[in-house]
Image (tube, rainbow, N blue to C red; front, top):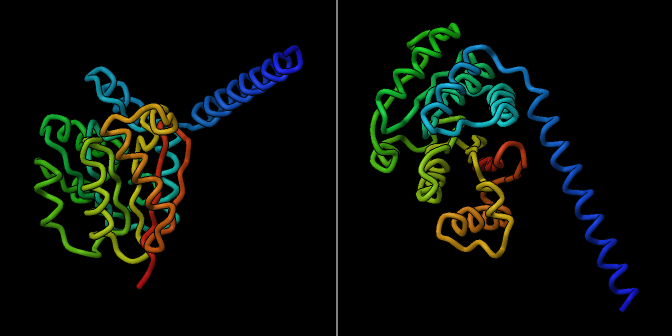
Length: 228
């Protein structure tokens, strides 16, 4: 009994130390990022409106992805106040960005932020409406990068459309893939959490995409469509 108690205490201490290291590493990765002034302002406006934008570390990953892929055509599902759009165009300043959101006021704020950052208005196309209604009208295989960051309840639908409209070799990025730690907790079985968990599991086993899951921010799932 004493040996079991000692072993349990050791495992608990090791788990606590691991969690502390993980939290410190997460903070370091987030605080390391130098976010441009316009993105900082857009982040403040987002939080004031009760909208959680992508974290700085996730934004930096999106910028790098856009740059590394040489993205020319980008689709963003969920405009918000423009934080993710600023990061995407920072990585690919010559790209054309199509952004979909229900809220026209948010989109106008995002357009203003992009103009303030020096991006020409012609680089962005804001579509106000439901992504479920807009995405089916978009052309197959036409986009280099698709960001899914809206309506968690519809994540499966949005990813399916994202993979359809992405070109071979294009990438679909899914923000908030870990859902504030709920996805990693097997006891959490609500509909939204289960959908994200199923998505992550299925794409990991799929031959149609190359996938990875980053723990930055609230999780960033990347699905790169294999060429045909």
